[in-house]
Image 1 (cartoon, each protein chain N blue to C red):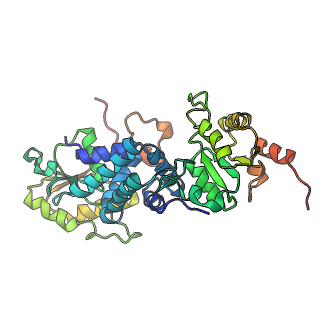
Image 2 (image 1 turned 45 degrees about the horizontal axis):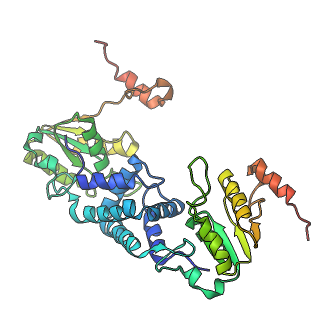
Length: 198
Length: 198
């Protein structure tokens, strides 16, 4: 019996390595692409090639951009003395979408994890420490996830980074959040951090 | 505030159009690709380009292949007089994986659907009718999904295709299937089609 052409099998195998797609959904995605060759498959191939050729990590902060230094690090208006530490580029983008932070970032590229054997050197924490003096940083905002690894990383960073103010994002009820749907940890944190109504 | 580079935004937008990926998971997939540039992103771009350039629909049956005629249609050993009609190339691949059918296929590329305004001409049913005499087909096996649209299409095809035996896949309990988990329709069909134990 005949298999699918090897080019298709190879494409399915590659697509199946994307997060969120398994072997079955990768096959479905490939057939979807074949039916939309000019409108989706060819543009996607070109877009991937362009990203592969032109996008690189910022050598200062780890953000993605077209140059050696990303647009945020290259913008002198963002040298506010505030440095926001995030785990991943996706978190940097989330912060930027919120349009509430005017300083610069540092992307760790992960979190300390004993389980996954990720240590301080894997996350470039010495490089982060080096930026503090070089860029006149006065406050480091730790915008790390409220998970066990996130908390571990925060405590490690707070110990390592001396001579600057270290802050972290507030924990509490999300905007639009219903108490009914929140976990006990969030409700507890929100109650402990309660503030006077103005 | 800065957005992600336009190349990245474009790639996320294209990835989000794949079935199974939404805007959030597309962003996650793109970051996953960026972290695996040489091992995944570049090979994926090349694989997509190769598929876009070399893979086409078989002009006879609608299967995917590298030539004008797919390997199944080009194989004289598969001119058995049996023609298996499937809705989609994925179904053809599923039949081939089962390694139980030695004849040829006809891919409709969809199902008749009043709701989606898909009629007989959209599915190339006249082309299918033309193959019967030209290829000496003696039996048409309708391997269409057991859905409303699938049943409608089967009945339409059974009316249209004259002079050949028309069969359809048996309905019943799947191999390994537990009665407890099966819907009433399947159990009813399996009971009506019950057979003597040999």
